[in-house]
Structures are given as C-alpha cells and as structure tokens.
Length: 261
Image (cartoon, rainbow, N blue to C red; front, side, top):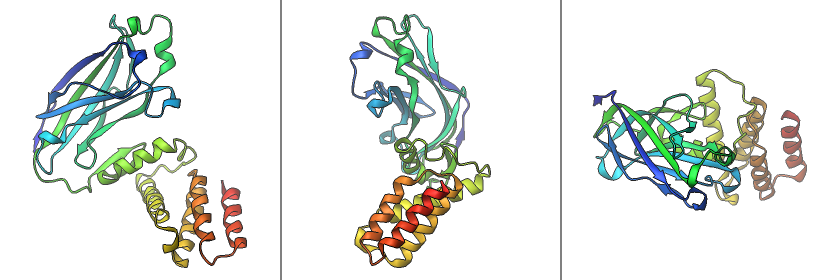
C-alpha cells in the first residue's frame, strides 16, 4: 500500500456540444499508477432531468485483483475562453474506487439552462477539467467489500455503493424527510431499506406470511423515520393479494402508511 498526495489535472474538449445526445467518454489518463477516464452525459442520465451528468472511472482492465484507490477529485466545466461555468463543491470529493465501485460522480452536475445563458458556451464548445489527488494505492489484495464509503449522505459498505446510488438516482427525494444525524442509525436504516427491497424483489408466490408481516412492519418503520417509500407499498400490496391475506388486511397497511407520512 502506498500513500500519495500529488494532484493530477486532465482536460478534454467537446465540440458541437448541443448536437451530442449519447454518453461521451474522455481519453484515458494516468494518476496514482492507475488509468482513469471521464464519462459525460450531455443531456443527463435521465433526459428529462435537463442536467449535465459527470462521472470519474478507474479503468479496472489495467489493475490487479483486489485493487483500490482512495482519491479526491473535482470537476470544472469551462467555455472556450476559459471562463468557469461550473465546479463541484466542495472543492474535492473523496471516494473509494474498487472492483465493487469503479466510478463516482453526479447525475446533476450542472443545469443545462446554465450553459444556455448568453455568452456561456461559446461556439458550442465545452471543456471538461478533472483534478484528482490519489491518497491511497493498493495494487493487489485487501479489498473485501466491507470498506465503508459515503453515498448520498449515508455510510454504506463498498459493495452496497452501486445499489444505493441507483436507488437515489431513481427516487431522488427518498430521504428528503429523514432527519437522523447519527451515522450508525443512518446506516442501520439504509440496511433495512436495502433488505426490504431485496425481499420484495423475490417471486410473488415465494413469500411466507412471516416475511410479509415483517415487510409490513419495516415499511411502516421506514415511513415513520422519514423515508418516502410509497412506491414500495404497491409491491407489498401486490404480494399480499397473491397470498391468503384478506383485502381488509391490505387496506389497513395502506392506510397506516399514508397516516404516518
């Protein structure tokens, strides 16, 4: 394991930005003994978001089994004249890159309306600059998936980073009313939520009465804690309708959840 503090910078240009639709991948560059590349979505990962999406990836093809890089990085968006249009805040964002999670970034990096302001994007050319500082280098062994990383304000296992990130990308306001400050409590609630989602993804006819009863209790608990999980309620009600539970029982669950929102 090596510790490094040197900051590397890399820039690439995108011509005819407004004509781009699909994801754009930068050339690869080296930092901390690792190849990196940037992926930019000019219309956002979800088109109707109207945001530029930006992600930094470590290239696992050039690394040994068990590799990891702990690194801070910052994106800066510039126009042709070098005027800064957007910068990630805080200045540097530290993340753990490993086989379980090779890339980090934001689906809402910069509003497209910002680029459409008069004089912002000259000649439809966007310059993307990434500054990266690698703090820790592991070339082989040591990765177990039990390392903790921060995703959307929740400390989760490295192996959970991608599912949690996708969860927030799909349901952006899921934790808007969640007010717990303790990191341990927040992690516990997120584990409950991930476990409930995994349970409800099982085939409809494979549930036991005990599993559905536990799912009901966990769903109510998550709602009371401030999570917006109404979209999971329909799954619970669907599973109940496929079991021997009565319609009256399903309605009680639905009403309890609505009351606790």
